[in-house]
Length: 90
Image (cartoon, rainbow, N blue to C red; front, side, top):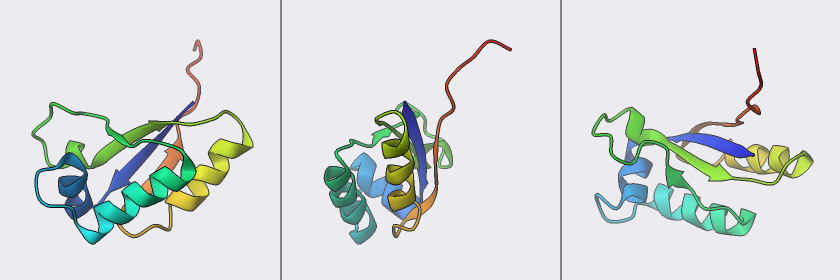
């Protein structure tokens, strides 16, 4: 499964390494490490400032994924987090 996380512009710039790490980006990296996930840019080649705020991480299936999202949502610098639904035929 995958979780999608949208972060603030300041946190995104720090996570992309475009500026020195910010308190928000450092906090998110620490939280991701505690959760056993790695946040990676969803649109790594994009120069669009909005798309640069989206990150994804592989997560375990089931309740563990829900717990990870619940820990990410209130974190400073996080605008939103959700478990990506499994792809299915229409």
